[in-house]
Length: 282
Image (cartoon, rainbow, N blue to C red):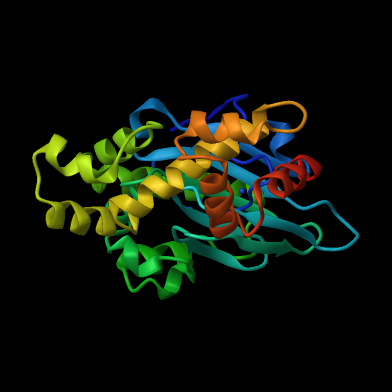
């Protein structure tokens, strides 16, 4: 199965795994994937319902470790790291500082909201705020992945094996359609978590249970994270200093003060400082 290179902007240009972060052989990506930096590729259409992207992060050789701030994005990632092996980055509700030794290579697959739990075969809430070695997942797939994707592989071999394994995984355990629809609805600026259950014709307790199992947390938290990602996308795309009052209104916050509180909770920085940090890291 071929992974097609794409030119779309990363979900977070500076985001490392886990968040900027997871049998049908995948083709080798083109040469530029092996250059230092962070890049994404679109999944094949048949996997797009579960897989957001395949991504790589390569730390420059020599010098000090590269430090990056991983931000919540409502996804989970299966990641191979050179010299370490394979691990899963669960969904986050706060910033995750990350440092990579010089020359480290990461190869990963990012699973969409609602896809992580079904693909991994366990409640994703068990991996909330965690980075867990594949061998420690307690599943047959985790043990198989740990044996298959050993730390000493070449990056090309790791990418091919990881893409193929995840391809099989998401076809056997596709995303929960209810939670996928919840994420779509909550991705709108004016969406309210309390309205989703009634609109979809399910009880609030059932919706909470299925969201926690498939996405790692309930619809209220999912809404907060998706709203924050809208803001992050806007500051990444916009030139110059952000108009915070306008961005707050456009991305679904009550006002600028609300945006500031949420940004500090989810990123550990106020909005202006986050925008400066991301532009300097891009």
